[in-house]
Length: 126
Image (cartoon, helix red, strand yellow):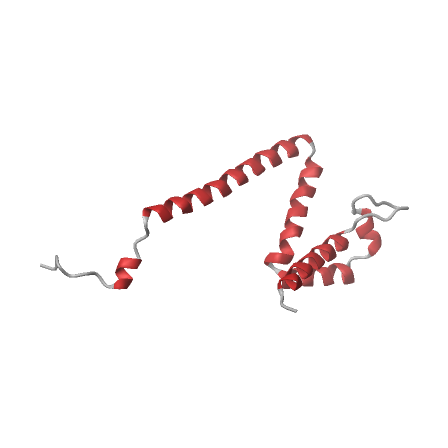
């Protein structure tokens, strides 16, 4: 009946080619393999040193926060700087303590924001 008729352009373009689907699976396969390896490594680390594993997860989250949610990152930075006293931050900071100043939570947030600012400003035209 309609054997000689051609399909409209939109109908022909909506079918994906097999090569494109294979390339798509390959790229997701690498992501899945990397995530599986990272999960196994994190699981082994949490069995041996759980505090380091928690710190590593927090560091990854703090590194991704300014790039994925910049406004939320800025609001969190304002909250930490305004509401949390420095003595409390210093007690739970890395390398700090009662008599020494270490890296505190607000330092990590500020460094992440500055890193994002450098990347964004580096991409803009002068």
